[in-house]
Image (cartoon, rainbow, N blue to C red; front, side, top):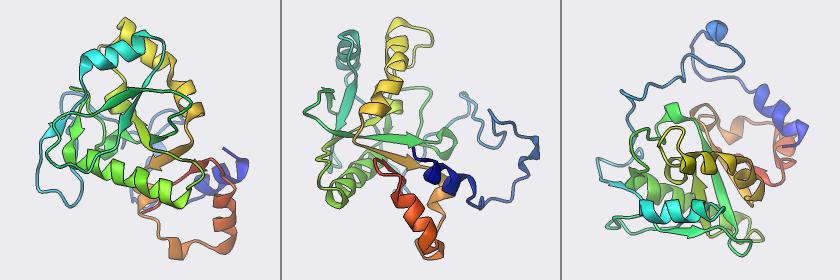
Length: 206
C-alpha cells in the first residue's frame, strides 16, 4: 500500500467513543473476540437466514495441491453451498479483508450467513463495474477458505498461502466498521487524491 494511503487511514478520526489508551500496538481490547461467545452477524437488511458453506473435501483437495480456493459469486437465495474453484492466473479475484469483531468471521464452521454471501457477491460485482480492467469474477474470504482445525496440516497450508493470496488479488476490499461509518462528503479533495493513489488496494467506504 502506498504511504499516502497508510497516512490517510492512520489519521482518520475513529467514530467510537471507546478509550483506547489500554490497547497495544498488537491488540485492541474492544475488537478482541472470544470463540465460545462469537456469533456471525447477518447483513443489516436480513431478518434471519441459514448459513452456507463449501464442500470441505473440495477445500482440502485444493489446499493439498499447494494452491488455494476462491469463491464463486451468487445471487441465489436458495443456494445451500458455496462454490469453490482453484485459483489460477485466468481467474482474477477480490480478496476480502475484515475485522472479525465486526461479525463476518466464524470460529465454529467454515460458513457465513447466506445474506452475507450474497452481499459479498454483490460487492465484487460492484468492483468489477467500477474497475472493468480487473475482470474480477470471484473472491476470497478467510472465514471460508481457511480450515478451522488449529495446528492441522491443512490449516497450516492455508495460512502459509495467506501472503500470496493477498499479493495475487486484483483488488483487496477492506471491510471495517470504523471506515464504513465515514461519509465521502466529509472527505476533502486532498484526502480523495491520497486515497486514489492506493491503486490496486481499494478501500470500500459505504
